Image (tube, rainbow, N blue to C red; front, side, top):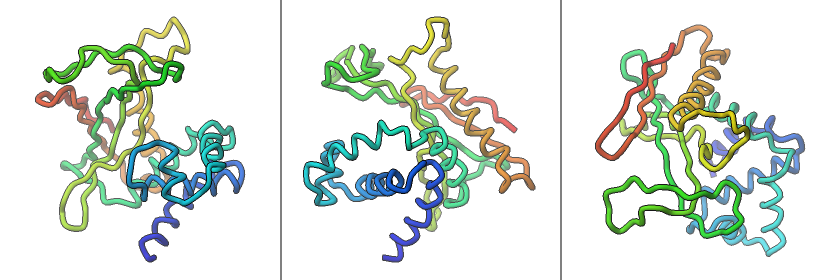
Length: 218
């Protein structure tokens, strides 16, 4: 119970991202489901682990499409909250962020942002091309109580399959860099850190054997 009380205290800090109390409470239920579910069956696993009936399935779907939940504000609140909840791992004066991409296969024929993706893998068990979502994600490296290191997810975005303008010529690395810069700016202008300038380094995983380091930002 003590752990859940601390968990709820942290989640309460995300309340400004929701325009209504009802939206916030459904978001809390969704986060509880993510923490407790025993399978990866999507929204169905949320309903199953909470013991709700089938009507809750559509309530969860409405939450993810609701205008009452501001994704940008939620992301900003979480990014600012993470350095206060966890002990960031440092290399000298630098915080360390881990950036990587993942291609998730999808079977749906009419799912938004699903496109034909090339599998950059040396394994013969994977097809060369798949239909799916291409995500890029950034995590903050933190230290645990026992000295172990873990990565806390900060933000993830679909950077392939979404075209808002045919004049957008940015590459995936350009989009990843812009995503990282938006996080660094949130930390830079956060009042908690105003007394000490913050340095951030990011490592982007190019493959299982190669890593590309992007210059540290101050």
